[in-house]
Amino acid sequence: MTAPRHRRLVLLGGGHAHIEVLRLAAQHRFTGGEILVISPSAHSHYTGMIPGFVRGSYAESALTIDVDWLTREAGGAFQEGCAAAVAADGRSVTLENGDVLECDLVSADVGSEPSGLRDVPGVADHAFTARPIDRSRALAGAIEQAIARARRRGTSEDAVAIVGGGGGAVEIAFAIRARAEAAGVSLPLTVIEAKPDLLPEFESAMGRTAGRVLRNRSVDVLTNAKATSVTATEVLLADGRRVPSTVTVWLGGAAPVAVTRNSSVPKNAHHFWAVDSTLRSTSGAPVWGAGDCVALRDFPWVPKAGVYAVREGPVLAANLRAAMAGDTHRGLVLYQPQSSYLSILDTADGHAIMRWKGHVFRGRAALWLKVYIDSRFVDRYRQR
Ligand SMILES: Cc1cc2nc3c(=O)[nH]c(=O)nc-3n(C[C@H](O)[C@H](O)[C@H](O)COP(=O)(O)OP(=O)(O)OC[C@H]3O[C@@H](n4cnc5c(N)ncnc54)[C@H](O)[C@@H]3O)c2cc1C
Figure 1: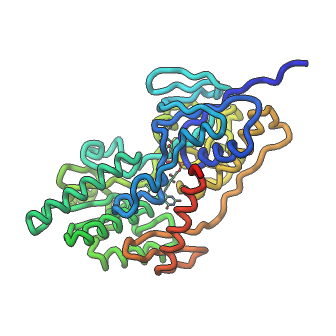
Figure 2: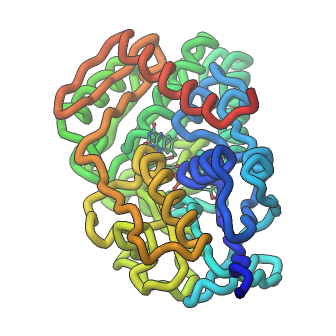
Figure 3: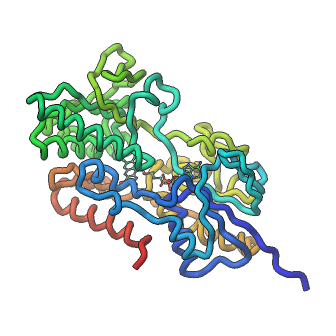
């Protein structure tokens, strides 16, 4: 009798889907081999709570998930590192430090980055962004310094511009406004969105409501406004306008990170890995993926949102478990994305805007629900 094959599964990134894979593997260990997790940091941070962190209402620990601990609970090993490329056959991963790791299966949940981060002039040098967490920390520090300067001088010589009008960007705008208000400082704040409406990922009622609330809080909202470059003191728009900004936050769109772009696996037109409904590469190689870094071949409309990455987690876990055990012939689990999802935006004034199945509502209850959902999510991945 031949011994069962020992397989090595490499998980790249501690994103929303992989932490669920690890949680489920901790409950019911994968058989057939070993798990190695590679991520730039032993800790992941739940983005749904980053705006609250920038506002100063959450300590960093409140949104921190210990991926190293989760990995050990799952019987795996964690290695700090950054993947540079995955081989087309899924049998090796090259790290940014040049090391090559051999493996039998690989899964990526490495997220995305704001589009334009690398190619729009001035962004890399002058703009903040939200992830990884050190960028949010630096942003919160820059806002605090701008507030301190305004207090000293009695007026603000700083101005903040948020480039991007999606959910995360709008929440960060509310968070910055609330932080300045709490300090009694008036900090000019502009949200710049290239599309005709804010929150283009949602129905227009959500964008209209968010725009109204932002304007009521003295935030300028520019739509149909494409940012083309950033300097230390302004954001330049395609139509020639210049928006004063000493603190620019770059949060437009979602682009693939380097490992997603540079791996020789099939991709969609935007360079995200093409996967089928089992979350395996459309090449059929033992390459899997979930979250922002993949494009679902059968559901191209799925947006880049954490809620989808979270729901993909159990499907990915089931299919990786089967693949590790060499048991894929009995059929894999198919991922069926939800057609609509609950979204709640914290307006940082004790209220939130909630959207559910086309209905938009603003109130305290919506914020209560968001706080409950966010804390319950992070709690799932904590030591008890
Ligand atoms: C401010 C803000 C607020 C948001 N709020 C919400 C919200 O309320 N609801 C919602 O649905 N979506 C929200 N989003 C979008 C959401 O954050 C993303 O869709 C989600 O994080 C994608 O999850 P993921 O699992 O794909 O990757 P992520 O959660 O981003 O995780 C990626 C992981 O990969 C690691 N990694 C990166 N590069 C490499 C590499 N080369 N090698 C190895 N590891 C790597 C990272 O360190 C990280 O651990 C928000 C986004 C922002 C910016």
